[in-house]
Amino acid sequence: MNASVLTARHDSLLIDHAAGNLSAAASFVVDAHLALSPAARQAGSILETAGAVLLEELPPVSLKMPAWLSDGAAAPAAIKAVDPMENLLASLDHGAWRWTLPGMLIKPVGNTGARLLKIEAGRKVPEHGHRGLELTLVLAGELEDATGRYGRGDLCVHDEETEHMPGAVAGAGNCICLIAESAPVRLKGPLGWVVNPFLS
Ligand code: ZN
Image (cartoon, rainbow, N blue to C red):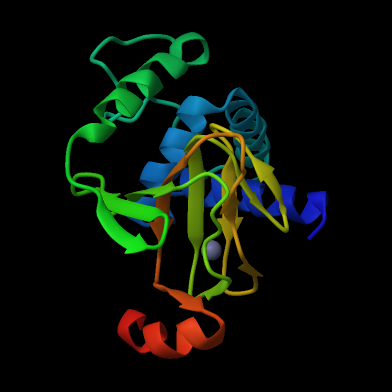
């Protein structure tokens, strides 16, 4: 997948977000992405301007800090977006992680519908396809798949047309991601034969 396809996918997501077309969980993850990524905020602003010209009914892109990231202070997001992130990372010990696959732990984020996934450094998620939209926002460490390498604040977007085997980059520490999936993933290979019936 080339860079322009990835950019188009990302832009399309921001437009859907601005138009209110995403699920609550996906919208939550995109809000966090916008809060953490100056580049995403810039792209959102450009799309907002373009959308205002092309589609008068397009509502503005929401750039507000999501409540779960906010420490209560109304800080300018562009300057202090990282601070609430530190608070979130510090609070990761609250709530029990649940074992999901070797080297991987998962837990829900309140009632947002989004989940946190912790992947041990150097470990790969089994190869899988998708039954819908999958958003993976990197909070710590680095995530890598065939589409590229993603650091903190970067959003990895996949859907029904894509398959991948994301992994936590060795040497970058454990990778912690915020995930929203519109449907369970479809694991490939022998593991999938066993697990997929339970996921669908
Ligand atoms: Zn995936």
